[in-house]
Every structure is written in structure tokens, then in C-alpha cells.
Image (cartoon, rainbow over all chains, first blue to last red; front, side, top):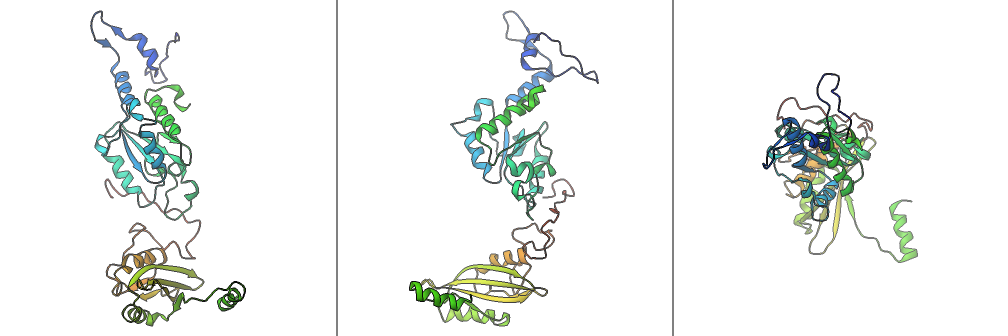
Length: 180
Length: 152
């Protein structure tokens, strides 16, 4: 905590954790206002209200639905499903991407407003898995759209998907441990 | 072991009984056979179409059922690989429409007289018929980036 974050090679301030930022926040006595850098405030807001557009393409969708349901309850992370790409920040690709589906995925991705992120859920979305060489399958959704977080598993457990969402939050905040 | 011998073997050892399961008809007689099965023999329900790619030939199988008796008959037809054309059964059985589109999509059999012979599973611009033997197993996956925004 005590170490001062150094600017990077291009002179931009280094990304810092929320805890580090919180130490610099100026609280006005008796008031509800605080000072914070706008970029950090926006990143904090973005990471705390990830609204996913769900693309349940195969069996991974079952685990994704379980993750959103009461037992695991992604609402507590501010993750609320959206039915339309116009309202979504993050796309969860849950399942096998076929050649026929790929242009539709690209269209949905293009319809999402910036900033936007993509979570590839499961081995099929990551790489095609054992359908990799099948005549109808795209070997990984990163051939179609850029992917921020790859969640391994076949299918990933709800805990794994939650871990992927938390990793994406750390990535948005610019934290070094985003990969952990 | 040829099928009749298998039947005799099972009959002798286990008390099995032969049941007619299928008829192989020449391609030019396929539609007439379907008409007779539907109108004379009560096979009014279309079950499925299937196909097998053999060296040099494609075998197309139509499954038909008589709902009164519960009997099922498979109508098999063999066409040469190079000129895979066959009369469509869609004018006889409406249920054959999508099944024949699937056989066309995956095996490349052209059904004459089909009302709407388009691909049904693969993208419209897909090249080749992937379940044929000559379709390369290690084919590049063939996905091309959409040519423009919102091309879907």
C-alpha cells in the first residue's frame, strides 16, 4: 500500500487498485462529496455493473443459467442479464460457435456500445475443443471477436464462471492480478 | 454373414423371427413405390430420411410407417456418386421436405421436384457436402470474416 505507483513508459499514471485509490479520495467534512479521478471512477462503475448479453450456444448455457440463479446469484456482483446487445457491456459466449452462428455473433458484438468486453466460457468457445476439426465449427470464438477472459472447463462450474467475471472486473480496474 | 443366414441362425438358436424392414428399389421406381405404399398399403406417415456415402455410390433411405399396424418400412435407393439425383418424395409426403433438404445439404443429393431445395443446416455459402467421403477430414474450417458490418 505504501509504495507509490509509477507512471508507465508513455507517462500515463499506473493503474492502481481500488484500495490505493481510496487512500487519495478527499472527503469533505460533513458532506457526501468526494474527489476521485474520473477515469478511475468510471472504471470502478464499469467493473461494478457488468451487464452481460448472454449467448447460450450449447451445454455451457446450463451452467451459466445456474450461475445467474439463486444459489450462486451474480446479482450481488452487479451482474444483471440483458436481453439486448444495446444494453450490454459484456458478452458471455457459452458454448460451441458454429460457422453459421459466427456472423450473427459478430453482428451482436458490433451492436454493443463501447466499452465492451467478452468472456469465452468453456472449452468450445475457447478453442473448439473436440469439435475443433468438425466441418461446421469455428475453432474458438476469438476468430470472430476479441476475447478478454477465457474460462476453461467442459463445462465450467458456476464457480469458474464467477471467477472469470471477477477476473474481468480486476482487468477493467487495471489490476496486475487480473490473471490470477 | 449375409442377413438371411443371420436370421436363420437367430431363428434356430433363440426363436427369433424375420420381419420385413426394408425394400431396395431402383431410383426410377422410388416415387411410384412411395405412392403404392401410401395409397395401397397404408404407410401414410413419413418417419425420416437418411443417407450413407459408400465408395462410388450414395444410398438414400426413407422411413415410412403404417400407423394402423405400427409397421415400419425403409425404402432404400442407391444412386451413383457423381450424378446424385433422385426423385423427391416431398410431393408424396409433405414431411419429407426438410429431411430431403438435410440429405441435400450434407450429402449433395439433388432431389428432383423438391419444392424448396436449399441448405438447411450449413450456411448458404458453404462449399461442399461435408458427410461425403471425399470431403477432406482436415479441411480448413472455412470460416471467412463477414464482408461488412451487419452482414448477417
